[in-house]
Image 1: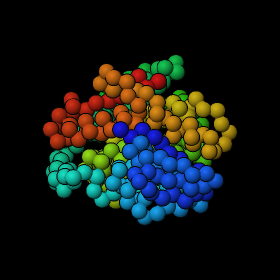
Image 2: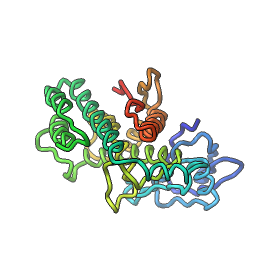
Image 3: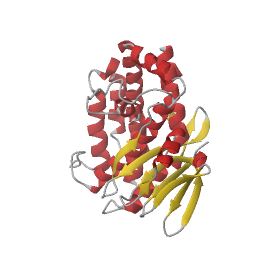
Image 4: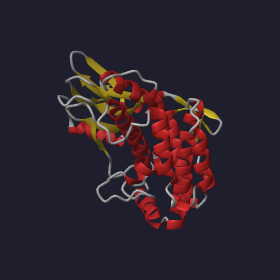
Length: 290
């Protein structure tokens, strides 16, 4: 099982040899592709061969490219993630609105539940209001309890003047962390033979990752809690490495300890089982991340 998160932060040439990623910089490093879960190319001075890119795709390694500010700007998504991709795509197109609505309701409910758990652990009385929102959720969250919960939640975490639209290091950290979670979710979607464009709730014509944006929602509070407990005035390389390491943290999944990276895979597969069998009880959510 792949487990390494490899970050290339300095100028280097990457190529492929005998099943391994070869990193040629000041020194030469070799890492077998079977060990790599995610490759983050942080430096725009990095070059890599087409041969390597092809082999990374075959090994289902998620590759994230960063801009000159070392912020994620793109990820590599293969055309085919599974031998039966065509059959999976036909399934995905046939998911009916009621089933998608039911699954989305479960996802939103779990997101608010995890936000409530964060507030309760921090001793914030606002968790009681999120408890009330959980009782008020309707099919497809038509009354937008998710939006109301988010406002209460972020103000409780970062103060009444905080807004997700502010140009602030906290938002830079949150956005970076969310992009890592989204990339991990997208990797599992494609790996299971589905496409990321067709979502349950998100349907923006300019968003290539509508489904990933849907499925990642319950994992956002993990990033929120991590950022809250980081001490930084500027969001830089050190902080990015801390957030990347979140994928190596442990959670409880179906009564067993799992690394978050693996738990995301189990969760995504359970979502597809629930959609295809029209049974939301099949969804596996994580527990006790904090």
